[in-house]
Amino acid sequence: ALLHEHGLDTSTAEEKAALFSEAADVLIAAGSPADTPAKGFFVPGRIEVMGKHTDYAGGRSLLAAISKAFCIVTVDREDAQCRFFSTAPGADEVTLPMSPDLEPRQGGHWTNYPGTALRRLSANFPGLLGVDMSIACDI
Image (tube, rainbow, N blue to C red; front, side, top):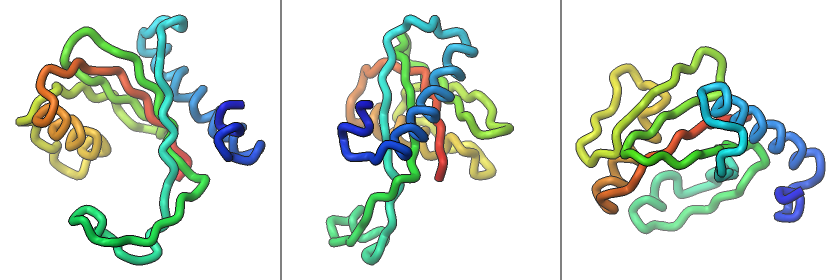
């Protein structure tokens, strides 16, 4: 209902609700109690019409959001570790520290992107605590 209230049509909102449910189920299967407070994040995909990569340097871009998206569920931790899970077949669980010195894994591993975000967050905001994060995606 919340996704529909924020602009998604009913069928798309139902699809995303199913992705959030899948992501939450992964965290529960990994040991998080079902009644643990959690946060959900909806990250729509985007089409870059022009200006690819110029937005990172303060340039202009023309973008459009699409209904395909990442649906992420997180549960707070009391330490500085982040456990990443994916609903994608064959994706392994990975634990990474909140550290400004975090190095990417070799071979283009799927956690390099969130690992890079952890490195930047740790450098800019020292002392942050970690999360358990489950990512479902239909992109």
